[in-house]
Image (tube, rainbow, N blue to C red):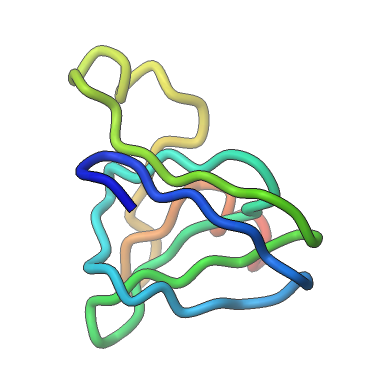
Length: 88
């Protein structure tokens, strides 16, 4: 856990509560299928398969806007586009 990056390893596929305040600026990589905001404001990860993952926040706006799958507002909460597709 750092100021702009969280890295970890999931032992199985599924939904995980990450007790870190959600931000729409997360950029997910590795085994993360999607990132979402829970009703309590915490971050929820949907992990596609066991393995390593990383959440990071780009250091500048240009990098953030150029990131594929950058967050979109869908329904009542903020979800990354990958989550919106996965939930259909």
